[in-house]
Image (cartoon, rainbow, N blue to C red):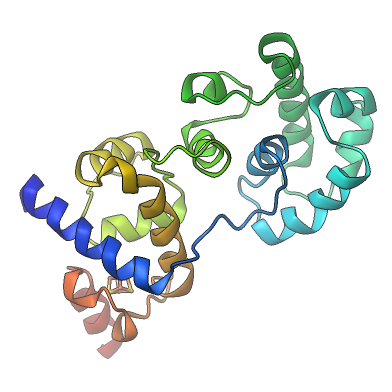
Length: 221
Ligand code: SF4
């Protein structure tokens, strides 16, 4: 498929997923850019459910700003997040990030890709989550595990590296729909296009998906 054909296919996918998942949203609970930033960093290789169980009560009780986290100190913060995977290294990253926010961004969460990715522990994926959810940026693609897998199965990218996938998708998804694409495809990955057992027989994107036949043939064997 050439670029024009892929762009047309993406438009159809956006239309169908928009009907199916009109309320698609991030699965992390947050009330401010600061909360979403911390939760996004802590969610790496952990579940959103675990982060939502652990962090919102802590934000309510004591962590409302980077200053609060630093004041509590590394030892206490580490203890508070010990139910989260890799809590030791993540606690250190969060402390460093809070210090940076105070020194370089007047204690605020930066609202640019450059500013966000300059923070300790924040990559392009996390930065895109913050920009889309908190600062109304529509031209961001969040290449998480679901977007990566489903986009590949749909034949929209062949790359394996997140940055290349992001670049390729940005060429075929209209800028004003890129954040929506990320949310809806993420939802589709959670609900239908499961990593191990995609429900191809009931998938409403089946007619657009070159992988459908492969999976259905596999199940028949
Ligand atoms: S047809 Fe199957 S592989 Fe393709 S998007 Fe749907 S569930 Fe995923």
